[in-house]
Amino acid sequence: MSFDFDRVVDRTVGNAEKYALRQKLFGTEDLLPMWVADMDIETPPCIVEAVQKRAAHPIYGYEEVPQSAFDAQIAWMKKRHGLSIQREWMFYSHSVVTTINTAIHAFTKPGEKVVVQTPIYPPFMHTVTQNGRHILRNPLKRSEKGDYTFDFDDLRSKIDADTKLLLLCSPHNPVGRVWSREELQALADICLEHDIKVVADEIHSDLVYAPHRHTPFSSLSEAAANITVTAIGPGKTFNVAGLAISTVVVQNEAMRERFSTAYERIHFAQGNVFAHAGFEAAYSQGEAWLEALLVHLQKNSAKLEALCRRHSEKIRFVPPQGTYLAWLDCSGMDLGNRELRRFFIEEAALGLSPGTSFGKEGSGYMRLNFAVPSSVMDDAIAQLDLALSNFGEYGL
Image 1 (tube, rainbow, N blue to C red):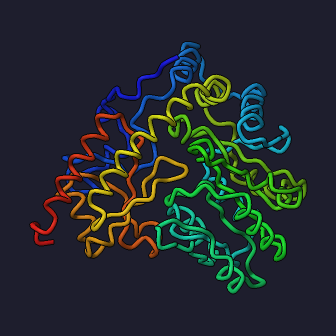
Image 2: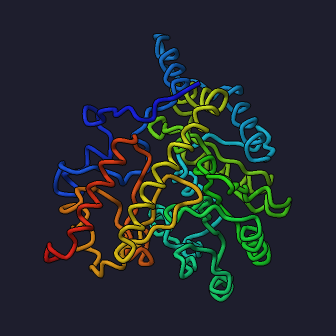
């Protein structure tokens, strides 16, 4: 079966976030928006067909997430990640961010500390502070090659009696690391020693490039599973973020009771009827599409890598091991963060995510989403190539 990842779909006719907010965020609509982490690639046909079939029924009332949908995800996780999940461990959730908020309420009290490993997806920080908790920053450690790992010495030096929760991004957004089992085990050992619960955001777990493999944090050991809340879902993998459906896995019974108490206060209900149909179709029929997608994404990543090699004195790029997000090191351009952002908007006509939105460790970086059709990627490469070639003539 073949899939067309080169077809350009006009998203300006709807209310797609990355297009609708161009004027507000970038001051112009005349640029390629490559910031929001969804794809400009068509959702798999099996999901579209399932949603259309459900839409044909004329009643859109309250519905439970069907057992068959959970069964499809359980089978998927076992086949692709070797993770055995039981239905009674699972909750429906609107999103990973909603799950993180719920976990913060379940496992911490106001004034207590939550470990956040920067640079990081911005809601990791917002959910902590907006809920009246304190961020314990444990920045990732960057090598001279530009890749990252955990800084265990820093973490150990900062943990105190008020440190109750760690937010893990695995695979990592924005740096693209797929953490090794050894790295995750070392992190688990620290958390177990200090009785720190872990929320593992594994929403990008299916977007991993060979030879790398995703290791679910809860699969490390029974002890690790007993301190873990795992957030998973089809949103990133199958480009269905707009269906607003994910799941939460809490294996430990005592933790599950605490999570459930916070969960019931919020009243999640069961989501929408179209999400149920799309969710089940994704996990029961979407594997061939995903395998083809990963090949396409690697081609786009390779194009960007080749460009950055041509301009290595200005911009560096370590291809991600997972996700479809490029973490561009622009420090060689020697621009302030405002000037750097302005360069990408005005000279390259690209709307990217500024590195500083991921924490101060993102200074000098920009994040680019390369989950786009081939022709769009070629346009972005050409625009950035020209802008970098002419860099120095703009008076920035």
